[in-house]
Image: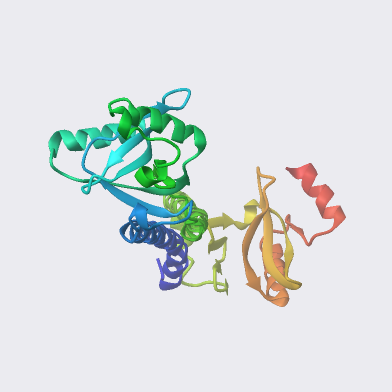
Length: 313
């Protein structure tokens, strides 16, 4: 295998490497998003210092919160928590979160569990249930009511893990990288399979005897005495006698024409392209060249050739 052919194959292998690079970048995006989240968590203020809803805050509770109200399916609970200074707070917990806190205190009886979340306004129904729960074991003269409720619990409760800051930037970037990375990896894998099948074919052995003495050579193609050898989505070797129809295919991108050699082979209606990037003159010369190699090939894109091709396939 000559050096040019190795470079042609290597160009397709690069697709797979590029895909791997994208995957690595996805991991970096994940680390980016996590670092933003972790920074927010670390810099969260204590709940008593916050004076607005939907703000990030935390409390340190020294006991398992006391549940006093639940939603209809009992998947979330309102509970009373107490910090190291014996100040009271209201928190909203899921069953899983409650179990996590309970398990923590089973192992750390004198510890402090940090509850971080979003601040929510204590609505009248929550206040009503909290007052009722608080007064259950309190003597009448110390009863809690609407007039002194805020002195005990403040104006906001904490919804654990309820912080919903927009982390869309790293997520959007990561999704784009997934798309591009997936494309390049799939293309790289397909190219490898195509190349492997070609290398194991009889045509490959015969073509390798001719590639060192090419009759026509471009950046991504070697035209030998009997074969078209090129690498685009894998190494491909086509015998001239198998070509049914060949013509110049022009594709416009942003108004700029891009030319490629298009051909069809026996037993297939699929159009094959030798990559864009050739000049119009170069492609036309290649079309004429292949036409001379196979007198039966249909040369040029015309309505007549289109109909003849349909009859031959």
